[in-house]
Length: 63
Image (tube, rainbow, N blue to C red):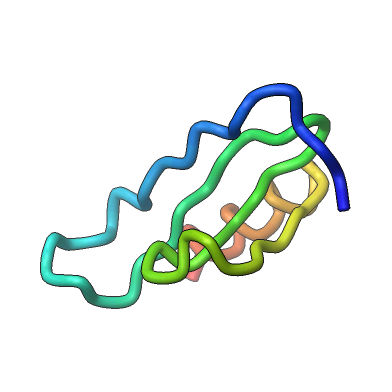
């Protein structure tokens, strides 16, 4: 497990609504992007390399 000197600043997806639906949060980690379920903040998260994150977001935008 990677230890961080400061806590990551998680931010909720702009597509999330305030009704507690399916939401993800992302944070910049040391050299990667963290993704977690906003309903399970203390639970696990995945870490993606920046190029993988960019490819994922691009594919979502392109449909």
